[in-house]
Length: 338
Ligand code: PHE
Image (cartoon, rainbow, N blue to C red):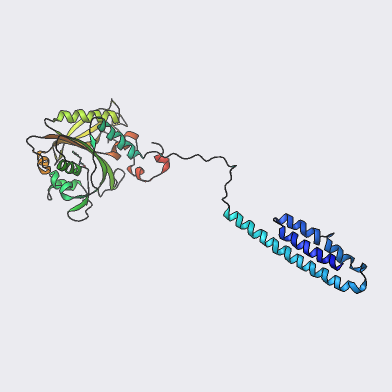
């Protein structure tokens, strides 16, 4: 009997060691310690063992029972622990899940309209040029014939960095920078961000402009009218009426503002056009000879046309958006409509 117990001890401990799952472990447990398990049976049958052996065998059997229970508990802990680790370490990918549709991004409406506008002009032979957003007083104002005491400075609510440095209030300084570097003739389009201290439903402190400049000999107001008519008819539609309304800019002479027939009411008069049937869309004119002189060109030999338009304004009219701030809120429900 004694040897039998020793053999049971050896094999059962080996079996417990070899177990790899909880269910296997419970099988081993019931085989030895269950109601009809080997050890349970031995303990039950102790009464049949000769009296002189009974106490040693009994003690041995009980020790074995205790040791096996401890070994099983220990093995159970180990299995649980390694299961936990496995769960943490294994990437939890469920390959049976249906695929997830990738959302395709789209261009921001401001980028879209900028692209459309620049494309109209690049098709006509204009080159795209960019300039700095932090600008010197000379390029933003002085060289554009807006001296320090000039009332036209009031039109621009400027963010100053120092007295001589500012966030550019328009893209017109790129005209000067380009003319300083390049000999005429010139056909450029300059898209970019500009800054003005202004904020309401139709103004944001940062917005986008596109500047156009064409320099050559014998450029007339007729060229300006033709160019801008092509532009308006391409961006809106061929039936959009436009008019040139006399205006003033220190850097162009003569100057005009271009109005288009209201896109909402087709000229009948509505809230968007304040009942006039017309909406202002851009500023333009023939380059003031003083600007040529400031940029190092000879005003007696050279003529030019220039225009500047707001991209947000164009996009609002083109798509019927009534609050400029929607462009900058980054709400996907708005942006995905373009
Ligand atoms: N720079 C002017 C503005 O921001 C627009 C403009 C550009 C007007 C070029 C005439 C010529 O209001």
